[in-house]
Image (cartoon, rainbow, N blue to C red):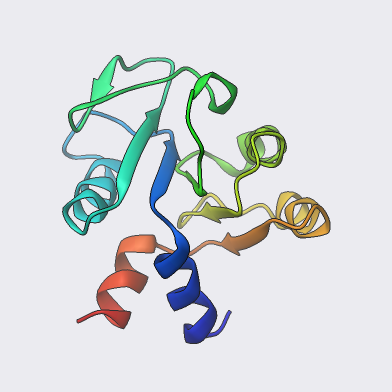
Length: 133
């Protein structure tokens, strides 16, 4: 994916639903989402094992989120990603971003076929820092 396309994703994104976001500060999901929140993005935690993360109410799944989601960020093992991508398509997210280690090429192909942009095995924080130093 080109830097121009990644910049476009960041510019058009306001609300990020983060599937697998943990309240444990030692987990990568916490650090990445805290960083993105500090840059002005609205973070919506999606984790059935959490009630609140980073000051935001957590939802058990994407379909339970009561507001518009621009981007679904995925912090789950690859085998769980296809169902998450299906839900992301169903709720109308424009982008699914599979963080490092969450890549699932088949799910990415399904997303793209449905008109949803897919980023695979990349870190939003790393890309944001690189592009907006």
